[in-house]
Length: 173
Image (tube, rainbow, N blue to C red):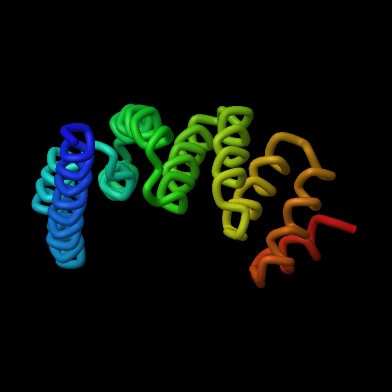
């Protein structure tokens, strides 16, 4: 009986933490819409204090850091966020987004192999996002993998990405 009570209590506590974290994320989003990144970061960080497994908070904070050009801070946060959220993914789309943000950081540092690895992970988690195939195609092309680039462009097109058609027409036979 005690075990059931503990499990029910733990589940309710987890749902309450998630709800509070989501409310804080919305407040942060409203601040970000007004270009108040300091206040947005305050609310996003507060959301993480409520729920450490909130992948969306890691993504939003990292997006702000990347927009400010603070790639090291973004990458460090993404590393932590991926370690914490991958084992308890509540939102696979957001976890895959964490990988895609980190791939962009690797790409800007010209670590193409690491960028491709992160995009591979994003695609494994979320196979329906054409952006990941398109991004990986661009990185593969920069890395000299024309065949892989064209293959990923075909997949992006099959998933409905019109922009991939232009790139494919230019670079693939």
